[in-house]
Image (tube, rainbow, N blue to C red; front, side, top):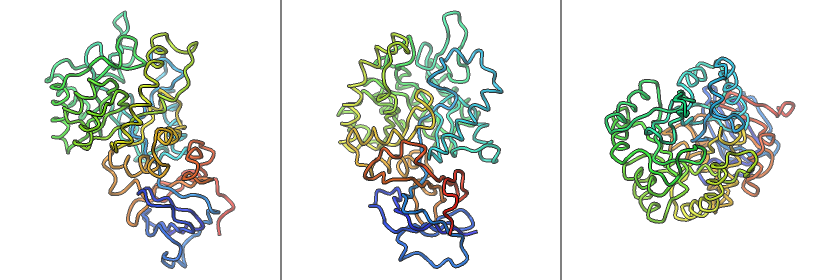
Amino acid sequence: MTTRYHNAVLVDGTGAAPVPDAVLVVDDGGLVAHAGPAAAAPDTPDAATVDLGGRTLLPGFVDCHAHLSMTPERPLISGLTTDPTVQTFEIAERLRATLHAGVTSLRDLGGIPAGYRTALDRGLIEGPRLQVAVRVISHTGGHADCTLPGGIDAAPHLGEIADTPDEARIAARRMLRAGADVVKLCATGGMGSPHDDPDDEGLTIEEMKAVVEEAARHRGKPVAVHAQGTAGIRNALRAGVSSIEHGYGITDELCDLALEQRAFLVPTLSTVFAPLDRAAMPAYHYQKKSRWSGISRENIAHAISRGVRIALGTDAGVVPHARNLLELSYLVELGMTPLDAITAGTLDAARLLGVDERLGSLETGKTADFVVVDGDPVRDIAVLGSPEAVVLVAQAGAVRKNGLRGLRG
């Protein structure tokens, strides 16, 4: 049945100014038949009608960087003692909570198999539309090498080891065979790993180029790269990757290179803005985070000012799940306008995922993924960071979260 949502302020995700007194018409195929001023809306005498009560209507949001197998409270080693059946249900609940927080599409960059995508596609569970990397390719001793001192791999579901260009190519083939939508690499060390540092280089340019070439042979699949320190960001960009994940050490020179190659930066500011608790963190993690916090803010703010393409990504799993849209406030704090931040979390994020022809904005003919929020996020972007303010979530017109009961008519 066609549904007509009226009495809304529309923010369509394209960066255009909000439209007051807007109407969204969703046809019986779950596509947008109209999104714009009420005066221009088609007549829909047989449609179901929903009064949005002056609330803000936006496209469903897209998180380009999450880890559904992880939580900040649970150390990596706990995977050795976790019941995999229980973990399956835990991940399903995280997916549902993330959807209800306003994220209708999500890219998991390491830790879960493609079966979760299949389960979502078949309607067995509810959650964001899902793209997966399956596992993260790293060199021996690199950021995704989770081998414990006794020789046991603490997270075989997370890391894939490669130490030469040929091994990297084969590792990419294994991930693609396993159903990966995107290949994830490590170009640097990181914060949460005990034996490497963000300034350490990971896979070499030649190793990453081999993966980029292999991904291109498989319908041009993208390559996302964990890259925090400057040298590794440079290596990754020179290898021709699709996106730099984190990018904390990005410089003016590397902004030029990213702009030249039209690579995306996914800054995962939620990890940068997370409060530091010395008592709750290993000493190495606290020291690295303390050192990099100010550097990261300064460099990402500069990249924003330079116009580097930004897509929303949170690193949820390292930070709490279902608080994904807090990331928008951090983008604004570092210099984005609220409208630009919303676009980074909708249409630009959909562009990075290669789904912008059908998702990411509320435009005629696109799939009707949308959210309705209490408040005005263009004036106060922080309202989007509260899942309680997200009162309605729909995918392809099907309502997944409904806090508007009693408002029909």
